[in-house]
Length: 360
Image 1 (tube, rainbow, N blue to C red):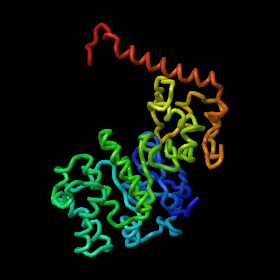
Image 2 (cartoon, one colour; image 1 turned 90 degrees about the vertical axis):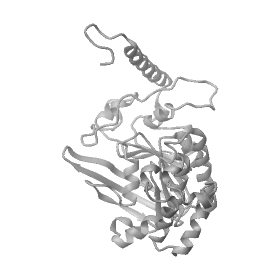
Image 3 (spheres, rainbow, N blue to C red; image 1 turned 60 degrees about the vertical axis):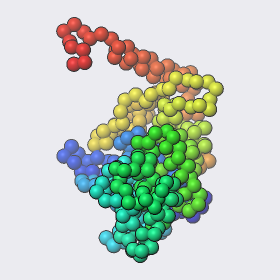
């Protein structure tokens, strides 16, 4: 284990709404070592992005951090004053947001926006910042960087805008780069280029990365460790190879089997995770995943498990670990999921009932 750069302890972030309190991040603890790439995966609404925004103290209203510590190099970010948090953002930690088109100012030239990110933090003089813009765009492989600095965001393609956002994130040479779904809106070819670029930057600059994604292939390509989140909590954590080879939480197992694998001789049908994540204003009792879990037992509906060690450097939050599930139960779970998919398909293809209008 390297030197710990970021340590998050028992973080709670809540949104106070008219419908009740939304426990978006509910007791999350994690760490990132210097130079490490950590993946955070899970469905939409499980708390990944809010965890990242909490680290930067950018939680939108009506949300706020209600408990926990965020230690960066031994200092608690939750206790920073306005000047300290302004220096922390951009200088120490930078974030690449999910949609570069909405993150970039549409009426300001791309080069000026990157330059402004440097001068705003007083890290570089105006003249040096102006020179570094071209260097940064070249580093992230933007062709004809000398002329493209004068272009507006709409003149960049999706992949080019994402590269510009990465350049902006790296402008002040941060120790930690948080990337929120950096390849979501890109086609497969451009995704591969961005993955290769991030690998190279991590190797050359030693910048630690927190990668938030739904893409398990991206995690396998870039990350050393992976954190799996569900309903605002961590349900499993461990080294990437170990988690992919031997997931112990049924949610992780389901996630890995809901994406195609090209490295397996046997081509099983993909198995979907039925249902939706719980309402975080009124989560179910016991294990939060139990209403969707194919291996649920009575205890899951009453008692919530804690994170416990299930293997070397691997922890999971579950009463029914996958290594204890019988082969016939796994086969039955797959068959049940497939039969439910088939039933939904038949229902969708069925002709409308008498007295109804098709498509109505």
